[in-house]
Image 1 (cartoon, helix red, strand yellow):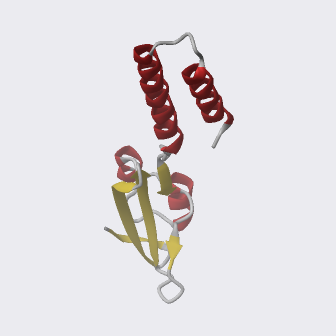
Image 2 (cartoon, rainbow, N blue to C red; image 1 turned 180 degrees about the vertical axis):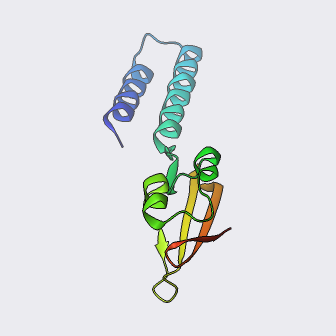
Length: 124
């Protein structure tokens, strides 16, 4: 229990035991402190989930710059290095992007470039 909750419990105990308070006032005070305590616990238990972005950002304007016939150096200058390079297919580069908001995948984009003789031959 955190120090804030302990303080509320202490106040509740002290106020409820005071001889000058009436029964109605005691009940109202107990309810108010209980609601405050519950609200504090609920806020403390909620968790913040930041937006997570993974991979290469594939903006439509940036992807539109990629043309068949461009070499690998030009591609890396525009998009950066690919997220995945297949060891068995050196002529294929995969660019992937996804974001996770509030624990759920909200966006996903992919771009696959095929090379032939060091230049882009096909864009997916």
